[in-house]
Image (cartoon, rainbow over all chains, first blue to last red):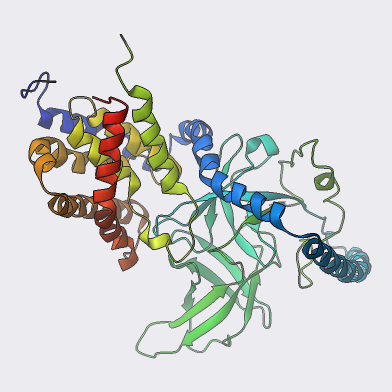
Length: 305
Length: 160
């Protein structure tokens, strides 16, 4: 048993010392932005914690999978077949339109849009802090993931990569308070900026005049301005417009299409003009085939940008 | 002996706390997730203060920062600040009843979360919302069990 009396520097000195260290780190990270390599290294080091955190869920999924009956699997298979058939028919039409679009663009002497490459990723963990809406995915720079990369799910844009480690990467969601994305209304091409509110189901559109033509229910797609997100992917739908004249601007809220609170599988996108390229595992033969025009995205969203 | 008795069980408890902090949970329970790292650290600070001190707290804070993706040092600062009263009064807190201890823990977790919020607000313009303080309640409610489990764990693996 230790004695009641302290040895070494007093408690207050040690507190001060610890606070100075923490404060210095905060300064280095936030003001000087010098901690990126350290952060990347430490993220790689803490990756096992993230993988441990999803382990119970994965085991559970595996057990559920093992317990599924033959008939349930057959039904599932049938449903997927039907879905695939539907999608393949849509793709035929899409290919035709794509070619036509490319030809027409050539006639107009404008740039032909090249297809983007993509890769599926699983969500490993979620940052539970309401001040930062972030996810960790199971792909890192070993797979060619880069900072600022757009991330989607099967409904729309989810966010962008902010930090990359070897086998994990951190995704900032569009609902994060520090995130804003440039959008345009699909109906009338009005450009807006959607800022995250810290609520997973809400984006706020800033600086909208009271006389705006936007309506409730308008679909907002990414505008491609800003250079991070490719053009034309669905992002959100306007849910509320409050034209209170006492406020300087109309208060417009939108609901993201992507189900940000229950994302499991995400899609990483490499736009055609990105200098980085995806690095596929040898074990994923279907990922290799992904660059062919076969959109896993539903509802007529093209995979060209 | 360089390795003190019970080092690995001690490290294991930290690892479990970190894993529980980032483990995906159903959306309904998500805002109520207890502040595992604070709870485990408070227990060790009042149980073996000669061994677990500011250095441990600092390292755990930085690891939390990494896992949560926040600016380096935010969680570290908050945890270091609540570690001070815990270390200062460990003998008193140790002898409180479980209810009293739960109250102390609630206050410590509340202070920690307010500091984190203030720093996030200062650095990253965070806005406050009430669900952020729900874990204060859930942490206090779960404290008696944490205390009893960790005490048995400490005795079993001779962490002293």
